[in-house]
Length: 348
Ligand SMILES: Cc1cc2nc3c(=O)[nH]c(=O)nc-3n(C[C@H](O)[C@H](O)[C@H](O)COP(=O)(O)O)c2cc1C
Image (tube, rainbow, N blue to C red; front, side, top):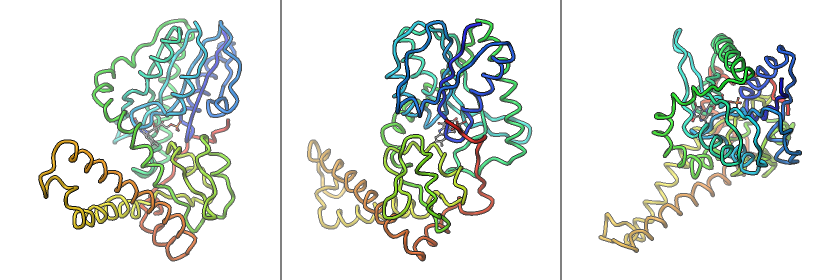
């Protein structure tokens, strides 16, 4: 049996767990699988793969796409002729007895294209619907449901691995192609804009004891200490690692403040502009052509500037207990029913 190299990236452990399950299947057949952390390799790129090895890539779906870190890794990956397979974990949920799948968008297809263009022979690809970790959007999945989804996924991966290890092709990711393509415009918007906005929603509550775990463990080094507290830079991929691994449960998504900053602050700035510079608003005075575009660009720019300034102001003011309480208690993630999720300890 050829050796296996399983390259993984994971925020909360789903993709890591999937890579481990595949490694166990390989070991149970007397083979060997090496797990390679993409986050670590990107800092210290290793040597090219053994030409005989089968390469696997396991990673989560972020905004209907592969995480930017994974795309960067594949972009820089050396050319080769190895057999490869791709596995993207998506947001699986369970409604009553029904397993509800996530949606991958370009998460399989861009990596597929990159590897194919580099000469690799793609032997298989499929999505895997592990429990959703996007707890900025919804409460973490209950432990009982997590256990059930894990069992279901384990069995799916056993069948997937059996075929891949047997040298057969697995192309059932193709079933998703029409839906994936339909959401691809959203994937592009998320990649260009959405992910930067999401990076601006995290905050360390008054429970933070400055242990530095979020700073040390961030896979993309996006958390730094600024204004005396953890601060999320634009490069944050919102992978949810920090929020789900904080030992003090001190990291929150600042829902209330973000709403105020994105809609309230930006709309006020817009109103003020309308009052003082009416020529920027084609609706109020008829401005068309180049002047119209320039006005639109300026208005978007000013909204972004307001968000940027408000974000800095929030992190500056978080040192004051009253302000920290205000932001913390207007965050949904603060409340007990808003569970956290992690599939296991992610060790790179
Ligand atoms: C910022 C963000 C964006 C996400 N976008 C998607 C998505 O577009 N489609 C989907 O099915 N799941 C999405 N998810 C859910 C994760 O892909 C899913 O829970 C994955 O299994 C997490 O894997 P990990 O634990 O290895 O990070 C998203 C999660 C996050 C945090």
